[in-house]
Image 1 (tube, rainbow, N blue to C red):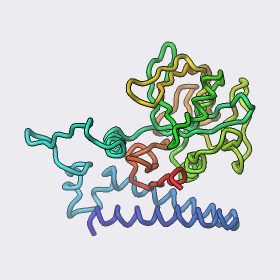
Image 2 (image 1 turned 60 degrees about the vertical axis):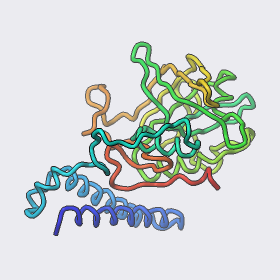
Image 3 (image 1 turned 180 degrees about the horizontal axis):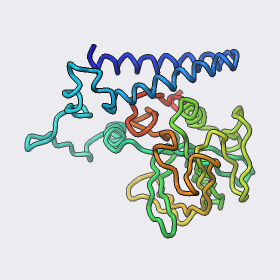
Amino acid sequence: MSKEAVCDFLRKCVVYADASINRKKNRDEDTTEIQRWVAYRDFTAYALSEVERGELDDWFKIDGEDERKRPNFFGEPMGDDVVNIDTNYLEHSERSAWLSALIAPRPVMLLSTIGENGVSNLCPVSSVASLANSPPLIGLSLSQDRVGRPRDTLVNLRNGSKVSAMVLPGTWDAAQLVNETAEAHPPERSEWDGLSPALKSPNGYPPYHSLSAAVLECEVAELYPLPDAVATMVILKVNHILRPDKGCKRGMPPDAETWRPLLTQYGWDRLTSGPDGSSWSFDVRSYRD
């Protein structure tokens, strides 16, 4: 059997397991049974990663060596014969699709802020970038909804709210959390409604969700309207980092060997786990409905 066929089979097993876990949770089935399925899913996903990384190529005598030489992208390397796309003549949806596909993966974070009316707000973003280390600055952009109303998170930040930026693990549950909070709500309604109870910050910042792999507690450093765009560039200063008391060696930052992959976005609405995004994927559709 070829390596490609084995990988395809294992991917299907992971997708099937994820769907089964989701159905069982929705039906409030026995926790022990759900844990068995989670263990099966995690074991299968790990086996898939081992095969894809080439650690088991000796098992595939037919095409193991050839698989290592295959490119890990679709398409061919570019030469002089190229397709020249002028982005000025693309529709918004076309530009968004191209940039989303080519600038990937992007980390997905969940922002927690509080409005002047006291309502707690949650907002998923995937435009996050590290800008500076001293002082610690991160940047992101916040736009408006389909009817032209600025996102509540941007309004809250303009009105002085601090922000808890939640780093999310690369899990199906985290992807579902993004899907549940991506839908637009009126300012008087909180995205926390229906979610598990919010956790209180030890530093007086907005609350965070228990699924967080880490939390960056930030305050606004600068707000810049982006040129010829409806979006605003938000620069945040990171004041505190909350992390679980595990997964780090001697207080140092985590590494790939001790922390599982984080949640990332490939393409337009496809969430998956980094860095390769091959084990499973979740399409965010709530904001479209």
